[in-house]
Image 1: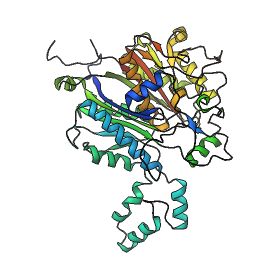
Image 2: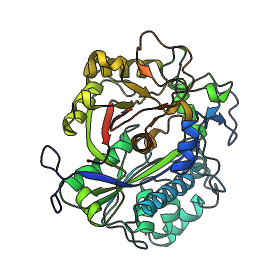
Image 3: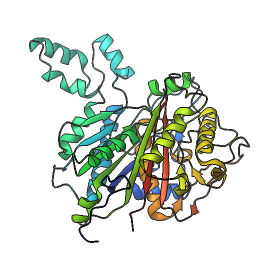
Image 4: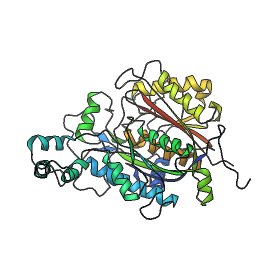
Length: 433
């Protein structure tokens, strides 16, 4: 009925997606990524950005095609975040020049110095075009302790400042909110936007995730945790989610942005509705710094809470975009959690892990995979899980193996599980008829 508000089963405003942008090692932009991934093309390569001598893992999903010279993780993150925000806002056609009518929620890596900047700080000498630490520290001292001249250095070592940069460039409203819930962060950003619109605090939100952790420190950290794949020859075979021979994930870079709007507001302005964020849910545990609780209760709880928030029954789910990192423990834990929630039907419910092709984009993963979940609904194509050559008998899932599959998909569950037991999931759906 014309003029009737669209509310969900709990009487809350329906929240729509009207714009998407994405960058991964598979390419720049939604369509370039979709073309590559539906063809089963891997974006994983041997690392050439720095020496990997002495490391057991030398493969990553690098975004080497952005104009960032000289390289720094911050500069690449900024370039990717700006590009995906521009793509999403252009598709949504919602923002006038430098004026977006809502807040920014951005998932970023933890705020920390990389090794080159740490070395420069120790030696008090320059470490690149924007990190002349000693000069900036001297300027601060000359300026009576005021930090305005320290901003250039601070911007490049505090990833939370990405939010300020993106907010300034695209004119989002209020203070930007930066979030880091480990590898669940990208979905956390979407969840914050969803809840803000539901509460009536805004009609629109820009939700993003970005990560550029392919640098020596990042690679060594995950190597010391024995988390990275050592199946690196050939590089395209390194990531093997749910395969019996899997032995770790592949670190990767990427970014994604989604424009969320109240469904009523989007329809009123004639926007194209790409899909619906039906609900998000989370559950954390405190079992271990990197491992989830062995009984899977936190992961199960995150899925159950998500379905409840989405007013969705397990039988309503047509497809699962799995977290599917390719580590032995994570994949098995995810299967047991899905079996607990979906019962025997999980053996016939299609499941994919796009990490087999683009690697694990860490902080950005939830946002990146939200874009692919929505494209699955729009295109009616299930992305393949490549390198699924030896099914694991302990994980009897209907993995979309090696080639994409056509299917009608109205509702997708997308899982994101992070180190430290931080688990967030989302349900995306087609526009209501």
